[in-house]
Structures are given as structure tokens and as C-alpha cells.
Image 1 (cartoon, rainbow, N blue to C red):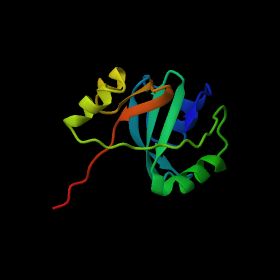
Image 2: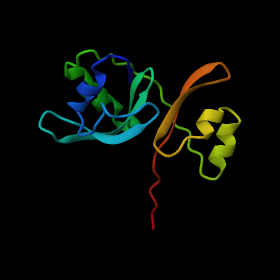
Image 3: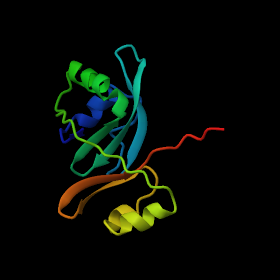
Image 4: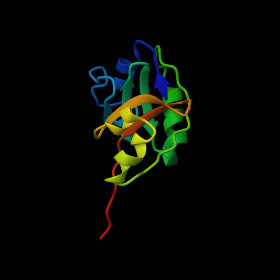
Length: 135
């Protein structure tokens, strides 16, 4: 959900406990989406690009999350429903694989992102996520 509205960061701060205005381009923040009472609806990741902000929601909760965003009047915020395709590649191979497609993406550290072009297709790529281990 990229956004280029001038007030997008401050508007998103009404819905999350995170410092979105202070987020620098290419950086991400793991935070939560809250309801009107401050309760947690879902966990989300907000990414700042030069072109605007992108909110990544959990695929299993996207309908609930987008409904909440749409139910609240956000000044200067445009909502777009983008298809996000996570590609999970375990270390140490991830850098070697992505380097074949985008040198800027290969240099990303954890919770960083970039906008790049792969075979003529504009892409937003981030290095984020977590893996839960089971005993």
C-alpha cells in the first residue's frame, strides 16, 4: 500500500505506535495496526521510499486490515491494494541469488528496502521477516 500524500506519515502514526515521520528512505519499521481503543488489530511493516510509504500487511489478515484502513478517514493518503509476493531464500544463498537480478537489493541489510527494476519490471524489495523454529 504505497502512499505519496504529504501527511501520510503523520496519519499512519494515528494508527500505529511507531515513529513513521522519522523513518528514513530505504528503512522499515515493524509495528502494529491499532483500533480506535488502542487495541492491536495486526502486526504490519511500514517502509519508506523516496516515492512514498508502503504498508505490508499479513496476507491472512489483509481483508480485515484494509477494511480498517478504509473505515478511517486519512487525510492525503491514497490506498492501493498491491500484490506482494514474498520470496523466501535462506542465508547464505539469498545475496548470491538476488545479486544476479539487482545489485542494490543484494546490498540490503535487515529491515532495509529499495526500489529497483528487474527485467523491465519495477519492484520494491525488502530484507525483512522472521522464521519461527519449532522444537
